[in-house]
Amino acid sequence: MNGTQAPTAGTRPDKDALRDMIARRAGPGKVPERLRIITDTSDFFRVDYGDVVILEGRPYFIRNYEREGRFGIDEEPKFWVRRALDLSDGSTKIIKMVFLERFTARVGDLTFECVRSPGKEAAILDMVRGHPNFMQGFSVKDASGNIIRIIDHIRGPTLADHVLGLGKDHEEYFHDHFPSVLDEYIGLVKAIGFLHDRGEKHGDIRRDHIIKERATGLSRWIDFDFNYLHKENVFGYDVFGLGNVLAYLAGRGDVTAHQLRGEGSPVFQRLTEEDFNIVFGNRVVNLKKVYPYIPDALNYVLMHFSTGANIFYDNTGELLADLQEARDKIHSS
Amino acid sequence: MKPESKNSPGADRHLLIAVDDSENAKRAVLYVADFVGGVPGFRATVLSVIPEPPADYFSTDEERGAWLKEHEAGAAEILERYRQVLVQSGFPEDRVDTVVDVRDCPSVADCILDVQRRLQCCTVIIGRRGISKKEEFLFGSTSSNVLHSGKNCAVWVIE
Image 1 (cartoon, each protein chain N blue to C red):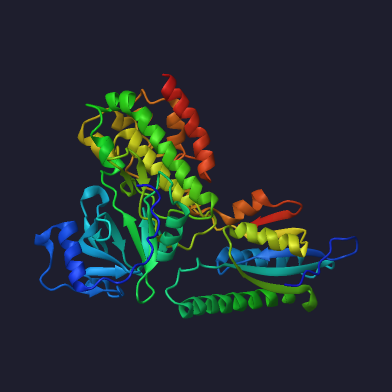
Image 2: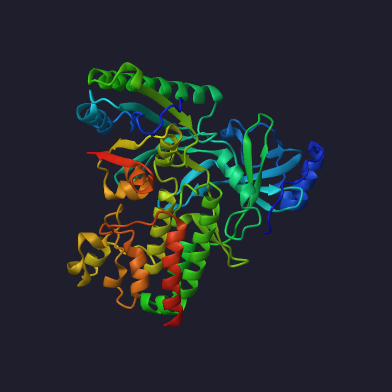
């Protein structure tokens, strides 16, 4: 995947030509009996499995819808996001149609109003073209002027799922695998800094919004269509999200009070309110109390995201400076 | 916006009161009215900054226009109320201005300080909401940023 460019518009193929293309790209058994061609995706619920959506002259054979795979439990279907086969070159794409959703986002007990912004995501796709730590794609307009994003499909697990399979226990993971995971994470923080330097925010930084591409080993940010009316610090919510991802990676999963209590861990009795995440009050961020071999320099970074913190990172630059110090300690030990 | 204040000797001292629709903003205005009202040599500008929403935050231009109109009207109403409070406290009518500033605004504090520089105000007055630590982390604090970023001016933070 290397900096996908918008293909040039071609002449619209007829139904017989499309049938031939489907047979060639997906197999003869996949050619639908009644082929439906769609050029206006305004009503995305009408776009069905087996339809062909033609965007700027290029045909896309629609397959399943995608799901929001958050934490693997509440996998809600995203009917406006469809997997598709680009019939011109056989590549798998993710087609994101326009869903103008406005909702109240809840983070712990804080709330703020959010929208899905196709225009923001389209602008960022242009901005990050060729960047190794972002999903790649381009946007086109359908017959009604809807901004459709056409994204290269990334094959691979989320980074969060990937780390769960590393090491036989946390100590082995931390010593043998975490140094390279931390390097990857630092690259991801720099990528978010790249956006911030250009006045954009990711808007929805979560651990399941990082995919580790199987073919290249690269970790890529996905899904940056969330937008909201920021308050004083335009990037604060992104930085908070980065802290949550770091705590997850350093702990090889969330470390919660519930889990420690369930395991009968003596650490549970020693935990104080200051040791927990500033917003998600059940997640331990003072991981050194749980895993004493975690170096102070890394724990110092984590504690910026704790209830006990008195100073916060305002931007990725401040976070990166401390991460670099932690990285040096971890790689030299 | 009328950049007419000068801090030269003999000129009025120009106070910039940054407000929104919150109670803490009201306290800031009342503090100025109580502290400076009727004292000669002061003028005040009451400012409301409305950060422009992102370009496609609304699905239509009409929706965006309605949002801006509603917020501008709301701000104008508040500013007029505060203008009257200051006049009743003893500020001369021609020494109180109001400004609604709608603009692209990554940081409201920066926008307030930008107006302070343009109007050459010697003092910025702002209320403090008393937000929680987590809110300050996630969303930032305008009063803290004004306090830390203000240069060549005094900053009064009213609780």
